[in-house]
Length: 518
Image (cartoon, rainbow, N blue to C red; front, side, top):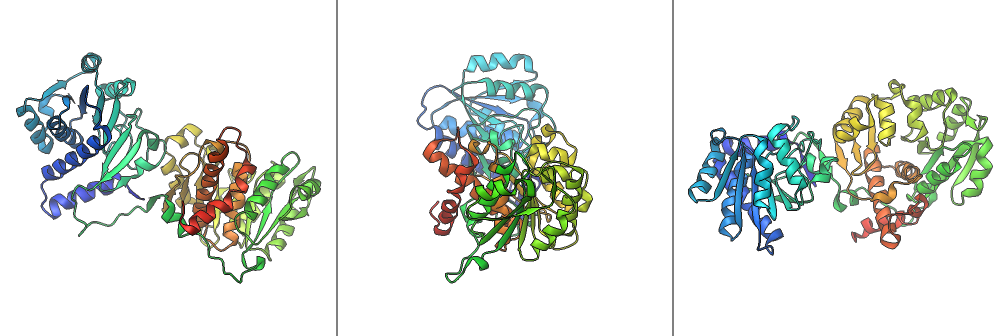
């Protein structure tokens, strides 16, 4: 699903009104009527109680006034609370407010937050319509509006949000201090980035996108290229496999990973690569743990690298570079540990590797403070896969700052450093250097266990070795990884799911895409 920014939606509205001469009040009527249709479809079996419309002073409130009129005409008891003085309502919203006033519908204007709790307790609504803010909100919610959102969230009523839950920034999903927790959100023309990206996505509930009559002709092009991943998007990324192919035709990945106590990370990465469809996988590990890893691996090959006390030394760089002459991609980082030599090793490989590369886990921590090694001006495909803690070390931001605006943090880092950035977590963000962003929808909380990221590293590396670009490999891998977790959960739930459970389901998830059966 294509997502757009709040700015792009505003441009569509301006084009419809100024370019085609469609009156704004007509668009408002259409939007309010479409919302009312979705309201009835969802809540039509609830015939008792009151619908409370909580309206702001702008056009989002105007949509709410239209809903008040139509829902009342369809049999509901409706009361409207306007967060502001009557004189504050102007333009198209004023037109729609006047209509419901002339109809005799109950409308109260709230000047301050002192009377709000009483209003809510008096009405005791069954359903609340949130029409406070639209998608253009960027500043923090304060005062009367903050109190109203708090009361909405504290109510037992079902909540319907017009366009976007009030308090969510439509352009990135940031929560502006507080946001309405909706059960159903109806938005217009296109879903917005704020609907798809965390943390805003967690407030949306069920999302419906409706047409409000903005002409397709003469639309200004979207500058953003953001997608909420679905089956069709990822299906097109699956690499083709010739029936006459053999292991030498499906890519050879080198995985550099492992140290004492962390041989599982290396093994999971290697096996994740094998399950990616990669023809050959070699796991290169410190000599001290090589024999352990060799016992754990069956399908993947292994080799030992120069080490000291179980950690790779800078001398391993030459060995790795030689190994890469016969391999199509490199995955590095899981379980490597930390040392001054490892910093030099990883920086050297990132700065000079001639093959596509994915860096994860300890590899990311080793790169913290060394970001000038990225080859921004050549064709090297570099994929970084941090969780929020690793992202904090890379950027100097706090985890809270990263989680508050995941979309912007990931996109800006990818553009600035010329890398594909996979910011892991619920609704994983995959950002490309050219500002393209994909937001993942597959997965579950079962992925919140040690080792699942190592499987993803191998999966991305294996797809890189099969010839996919960094952005395509990361996108497909993240989807497959999440879908594998869903398949495991169907059988055993998410509690107690371990990373190795994912491995057998990765080919199943891929085959679903090939057959279009998901």
